Amino acid sequence: MTEKRTGRPPKYTEAQVLKGIELVEQAGGAPTGDTVKKTMCAQLGVPGGINAQSLDKEVERLLEERQHQRRERQVAALPEVSRAAVKEIGAMVETAVLHHLGQELEGLRTIAGKRVAAQNIDLSNQRVQIRDLLSKIDHLAEEIADLGHAKVEGEEQLTKAQAENAALKARIADLEKEQDFRSQMLAVMKETLEQRPEVAD
Image (cartoon, rainbow, N blue to C red; front, side, top):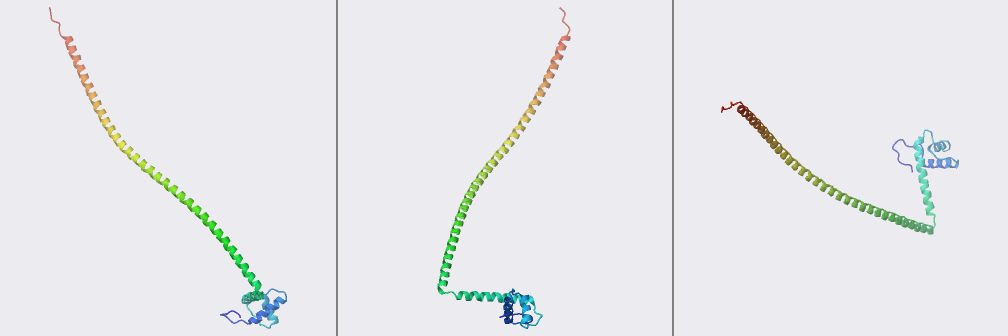
C-alpha cells in the first residue's frame, strides 16, 4: 500500500506503480520516478502532471519492500538442514567473536592496571619529592630567620662599637689638647726661667 499523504491525492495507484516498475525493468531500464512516470503515462493511461519527485520516493519504497519480500521467500525456501547449519555456524561465529572480545578486554584491563600501578608509583614518588622540598623550604626559612637575628645582633654590635670608637676618639682629642696645653705651659715656664737675672756672688 502507498504511504499516507497529507496533500493532494496521487493520480496513480500502487498497482500502477508496480506495473510501471515491471515494464521499465522488462525494457532494460532502471526504475526511477522519471522512467516509471513516462511508462505509466505512455502505456497505462495515467494522466500527466505527476510529481516525479514524489513518485521517485514511492518507487524506492516499493523496490525495497519487494527486495525484502524476495529475501523472506528465499529464506523460507531453504531446507531445515540448511537452517540448522546456519544457526550452528552463527553460534560458532558468536562464540568466536565473544571469545576474541573477551581476550581483548582482558588485555586492555591488564594494560590499564599496569598503567594505573605505574601512575600510583609516580604519584608516590612525587609526594616524597614534595615532602623533601617542603622540608628544605622549612630549613631555609629557619636559616633565613637565624641570619635575620644575627644581622640585627651584628648591627647592634656595630652601633655599639661605633659609639665606643667615637668616645675613644673624643678622649684622644681631649688628651691631645691637654698635652698641647701642658707643652705650652712647660715652654712658658722654661722661657721664664731662662729670662730670670743671675744672682750676684
